[in-house]
Length: 72
Image 1 (cartoon, rainbow, N blue to C red):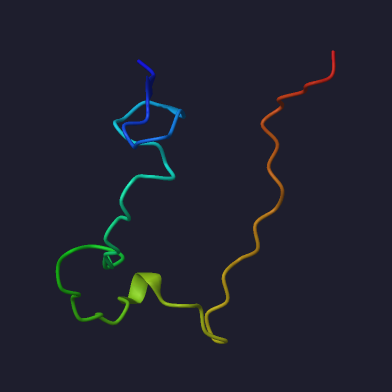
Image 2 (image 1 turned 180 degrees about the horizontal axis):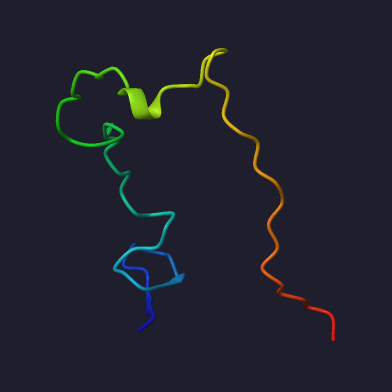
């Protein structure tokens, strides 16, 4: 429900007790980004996730169609 700002000589309608102009400033806090627990040490990637080397080239994949025409 809207009410008139409680500050004297102010007639601004607000949802709280004071309007934005007369609201006291908010304390600035710095929040850490990310997860709140300590980082783990990075482990080296295992053989299954390593990048292919020159002696082991992956076979190229062709285009695949699932037959989902959209034209009627």
